Image 1 (cartoon, rainbow, N blue to C red):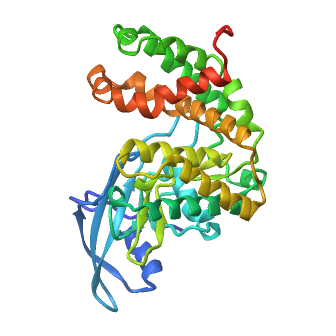
Image 2 (cartoon, helix red, strand yellow; image 1 turned 180 degrees about the vertical axis):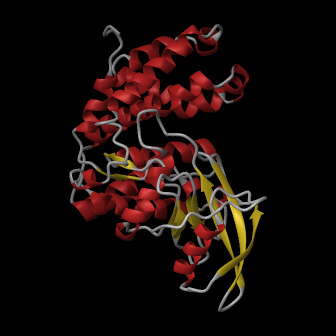
Image 3 (cartoon, helix red, strand yellow; image 1 turned 30 degrees about the vertical axis):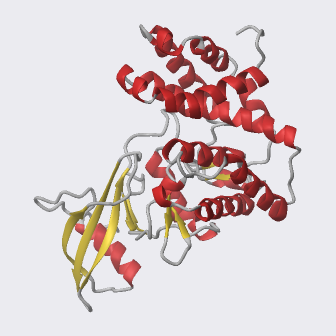
Length: 358
């Protein structure tokens, strides 16, 4: 029978001392370990995340005394109302899938069953993603292709993990409704038309035709998706290897979705030194061709990329635009236009046509 640990007075952590001790005893293989103190630490190189992320310095005794640096995550809410919580997904990956992943991930020390909090080993990075080299980017793309290779065509097997996101299948209606609601908020907002010109009409056309946007992507073989794979969620270590973390958006779908996120988020955050998108795409396609024996005609790939771009915009950016105050939008207008709005507009014109009714 599990023993409930009483929360200590002035204890500021979401877990109990007993939770932490039990996890560290397993992790350090020290049955007699006792936690002496837990102090907060600043986590370096952290960019926006779902929820709260803190470092913790834990001092312990029993057998041998020492200290260890850990990361404490407290995911907040769900990734989308009606879908699994972000923390539940991440806990699920670490507990059920980590041993099968072809990419290194941090080791889970302890967690709540629902993912309200997680304690992970700290990854000491050699350099921030802002200082990645071209080789770092290409290595990350190759690792992504290896991840997709491992689970390629296994959508039916991944049904065993119901907490994984399925945005193009079971969760499609949820995302479709959310995009429509976001578009309504944008259309009602005074001054938005002046800020975006004819983009409102373009977004309305896009939002009204989500099923057409998703159709080519649904025809592709599915694999395990990280969901938010980009340099900010990849640690470069001293030995040259990379570790992948933040699996809160893990899901099932076509691999091109992960690759598109990697390219667009890299361009958003690190435009000055990210390699050309064509080079990253080429490396991914080369590895997939070698490992899975799957190739795409360039015209087919271009169509899939356009639809992945449109779907990701519907899935993520419409909400952000609807929720962002005008000053924030104005501050990021040029970057948003370059990375998202203009490419999406061209994709809409190519794939959804100019004159078809909304």
